[in-house]
Length: 264
Image (cartoon, rainbow, N blue to C red; front, side):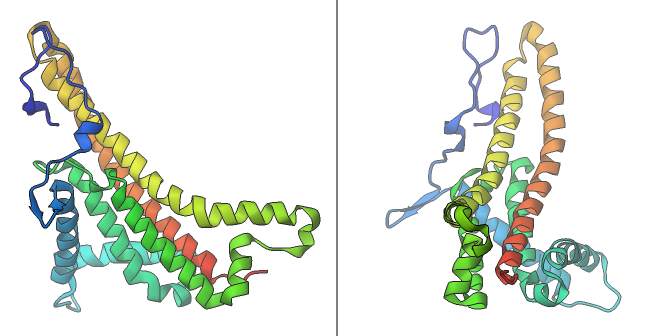
């Protein structure tokens, strides 16, 4: 729902058209053999195109003396490589995972950014399927890497925090660690991103619609206040969008670090 999609105003005999779950449901743009393709899927696809085209344009013909676009690309790439991957995994172990984590960061960030882009105005990650899909990719990578590095028994020890010196509390600890690592971890990884973007979009919708709804009679004063809040929330949302992309890949790097670490 967008503010201009309703003619309802205060003092005109109609209630406030509050946003809700219906604001996250879109009619399909087209259907092929029962498969429905909607606006959110289009934005996710465009996110992929934006990330690929940007890095292709920035590094497709890289120069020793970089141009402006290459400098921006290098700054973004280096920020993730040094600030996240190297800090979590070290340069030697982390270098091979840099492309994966850089791609993940910019993909999540662009999907978040659609929330404040005119016409689009919707964060892809506020639909749980997308954070869940990305979290599943990270989860499969992490579990596979753990088994590959430590073998079957070593991986189970890694997941369970097995330490025979703990004595009587060991069985309880093993159950808690297995539950936390193999079930709760991927769930919270997805929900953290989803919940923040869902709540942020709902707040933006609330104040945007309120600005339009109050734009009538004496309500114009309150409409102005609501519009100011919309601007402030948009600026705040810009910050949150970047932070959530950062947190998502930071946790990814930490999970990979745990897979590569030697179990003691």
